Image (cartoon, rainbow, N blue to C red; front, top):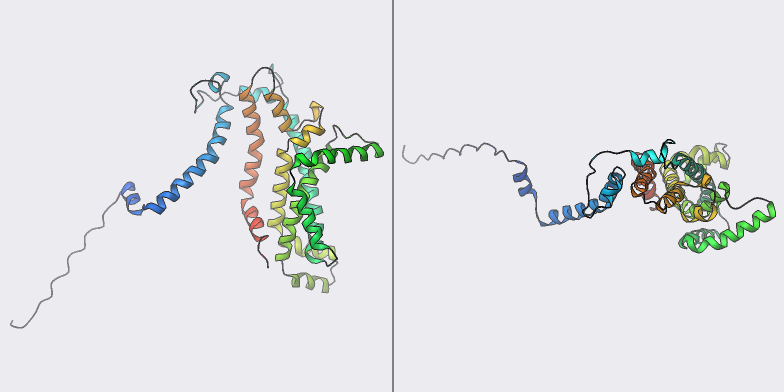
Length: 312
């Protein structure tokens, strides 16, 4: 009909194209994303490859480790290195289980004592009012700024004088070694918990005091349950320091029966007959507990380290 217009029918919708993985990546990828992925890959390789090399080398033979061409994958999963560490029937038996027990005897008490003392000290700094509080906190943290090699000589001389007066041996004494570890771990543990305690509203604790709780009761029933992430972070941190520490243990321990794992690994490394695969096996055993501890408690660790740096 004249004057009547007909609108064109809309084109039929094209069926959705099925793209493969590479086509999806080509559409998604751009230069900023490519650079970001490249940096992530670089850092992951730098972190994970040394760990893989250590674990794989523990299953290699001495010939594979010392070959001119690097052997990335061992030809077989040999347990010879682990037998030397734990099997008394092995001709080169190192009794590494005893060293693990010694490290646990030092690391666990260090972390527990550091947590208890730092809780009390950090709460006093965060909540109580007394003269010189900020100076005390800053001076305690200043101790942590000095490397351990500078503190080892005066600390050893001081402990030796105390031991001579009280009648105990400084050498080959695990409690003495624990006290030296506390000198390294307490400052930063106290600082971390003090910052975290400040983020807890003081009104909650004041309500507990009004309801009849003592100051220790408030700490036990209110402050500690709210500070679990920070306490877990301090436990992991102090345990890791005592677990991996070498210098102080090397100075204070002379008896092979009291060697911790780092000292025993150094002994294996300096053995006249080279045993790099045994060193790698012992290093793997020493590293795995800390890795599992971090992975299992990563949520608490992240919360504890981040929340303590924010003022409430």
